[in-house]
Length: 437
Picture 1 (cartoon, rainbow, N blue to C red):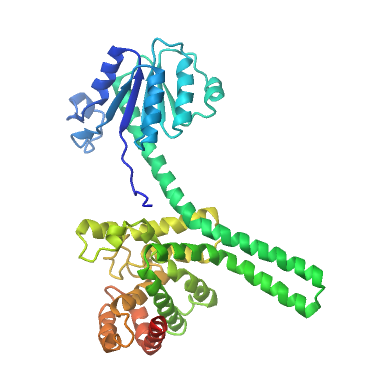
Picture 2 (picture 1 turned 60 degrees about the vertical axis):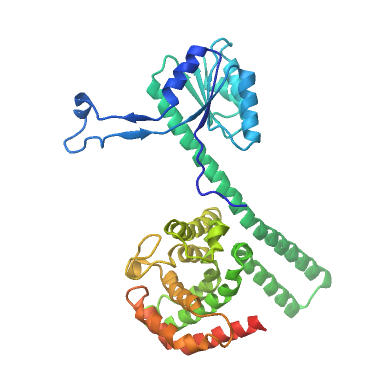
């Protein structure tokens, strides 16, 4: 199921038993408003050269009304069931006992825990302890004491609808990430079960020292693979969503690794590319396009040329991929090659001359792993997949990449690509032939 990048919800329900009050809220919030040019007295409050910009558009709200608490709860429940929830509720029940508004707020939160509630009351006896006692929490509830200014209502409507949208977007992204990580969790459980089984076998069989040493090493290797399970699960998610990557990822991984190994013995990056770099790089490159899980199928599978808006949305896969991996790193900061994978996911479409995306980085400001993947990815994109058919294009592909030196690509990496070109062609042919067989 697709997760929206942004959810718009300006739906507000006013629960009040007073007709005049309903009219007041309607006049304050119903239609679009504009803040005009400031008065001279207002301009005097600003330093020279820092005057307000002019007319600012006030957002439109979709208003609904309920005439008592029961009707309000029913409408909120119906809207939630129809997946058209309200973002904000204004409770203004003038003929009810004061604490009934808090009871009504509790009923509403039981129906829709995400809705933002404003209790509008002239009653001054509300206390934090009493609110927490009735509601269990107060993060969704604001008390607005009467009398109040229309501006207070307007600002609450704007900020609380924004808060609802931020919470909703966070929930959607979290659900998407949970699906991606669930498989990794299952694999981790299986690894722990296997470790437990191996330990039991060790005690039961009373192995000699050599056998015991072999088992312990095997156990260590299984634990060392645990971190890789999570990133492999993410790779599996994107391949399942976009099968074409299942063909491209092995070629990209092999060619990028050959390039990195060449750079470890040639050029100015030899001191940076040691064994740990090569090991982490090998496991990171398959995740460069993991952000495509957040791109609509209509764009990923489109045969015709993309429109400008579609290209802009497709380019967001770099940011989405970075956020997926970065969120995992915040929870599991000991992950090693995950940091490199996040850099590659965000920056593998940057250009040496600064004209790439998403951040317009240039030269050495682009992380080295992303610069290597950029060259390897270009080779994969320029090389047809049919066995034997791509060979006639290899000199042209080599020349295209060479011409991109110092504009699209790091010149030192292009030099390494030229040096390693025979090995790259051989690896590409082997992978293509193996897949065809």
